Amino acid sequence: MGAIKVQIQDEIERRFRRVAMQQFGFAKGSLSLAAERAFDNYTKKAVSTENIKLRGLGTALRGALAHVKGKTSVELQHETSRMRAERAMKSVSGRKHIS
Image 1 (cartoon, rainbow, N blue to C red):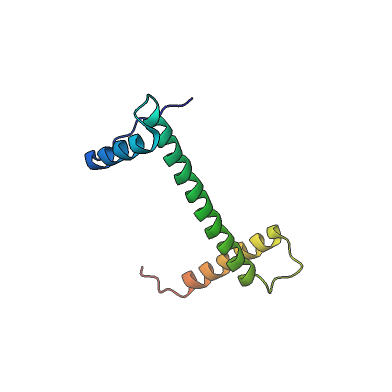
Image 2 (tube, helix red, strand yellow; image 1 turned 90 degrees about the vertical axis):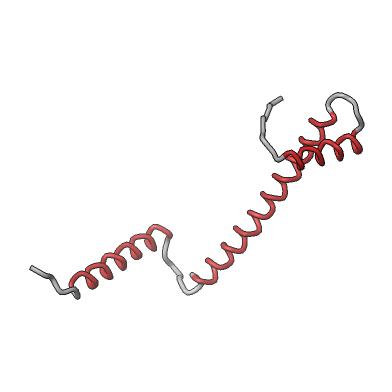
């Protein structure tokens, strides 16, 4: 089993201890059990939220790239690099140089 040492505000610690003891009793290990469940719930919620965000991003990207047909991801990367280089060259050539 792993161990995590954390620093939390005093008021949060008091509430956590009170709720953990009420729910799991005053036996040894009740705080650990409550903390384990709290960490588990937190990580499941965070992963679920992140997955929702990523799914939404994937949908947005698919929509933005819906017009692209017949090109591989590598071909698109090369095309993007060429476009960026062209824009940079246009930007530089349009500037007035001070000598």
